[in-house]
Amino acid sequence: MSTLDATTESTRRLSGRRVHLGDLILQLVAGAATLAALVLVFLIVWKVIDGARPAIEQFGVGFVTHVGWDPVKQVFGAGSFLFGTAVTSLVALLLAAPLSLGIALFLTELAPGAIRGPVTALVETLAAIPSVVIGLWGILVLGPVLSDHVEPFLHDTLGFIPLFGTPGSGSSMFTAIIVLTIMILPIVSSISRELFLGVPSELKEAALGLGTTRWEMVRGVMFPYARGGIAAALILGLGRALGEAIAVTQVIGAFVGIQWNLFSPGDTLASRIAAEYQGATSNLEVASLIYLGLILLVFSLLVNLLAQWIVRTVARRQGLAS
Image 1 (cartoon, rainbow, N blue to C red):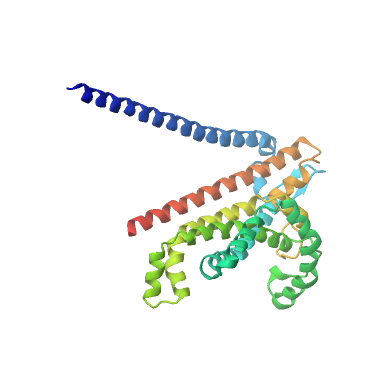
Image 2 (image 1 turned 120 degrees about the vertical axis):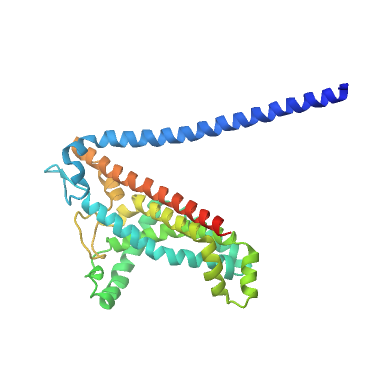
């Protein structure tokens, strides 16, 4: 072997060692970051369980379904708050889903170029508004408008449905639903917009070239291509609604009990924790509030895992189909 060949071989080995060393460092750093995230989640779960242990030992699993919250008698339950959380979050998601998809479609397919950028920036800015500001707006502006105009109209039109009963004051589950809808909108619409922009232009042009209308192209090409991401975006929006505390606390009314009338006050898991934790008068009440946090934590983890599972399942099916 000549001197030049030996030098080249030595350089290749050296560069190979450097590449392997870089890969090793990358794996160590990424692995450490992943491990730190897992440890952090474990510590949070362990601390919440430890804080809720007195309430778990006192009330057991029945705490989840018991309706009642009486600090004087030291009797607590999460039933009414679970009901309020489910109703406000699911109805808000039901309202936000078509609006978010409509905004995303408008910004990707219909909006003129001159207004596409400013409108996109405004929608994304909506997500940056602090929750307490939206809550104050809900108290000062949204609540009175809903109680004076919208709720009476819905009661007169749909009053035969128990959900649209007698209108009450500005603090109600309906006001909380509208506030949560506003908070979900920028999240779902921004993600959906990115998904629609990721649809290959060749697919859309081919559909239009076959004589389909724009709506048929959207329904037959864009929605199927992005359905996994859309489902995940909706579930993430649901997770946002489940965990919202401050804005909901300001407008929902803090009522303990189950009422099917959306125009009546109510309460949620996050709202009850935010409203009472600082003023809790006993260790059992504090533990019961942390128990509510444990239930909310489990819901949030399940929602995120469900979103990831949907994305992977749809991606796998699309890969098999292609």
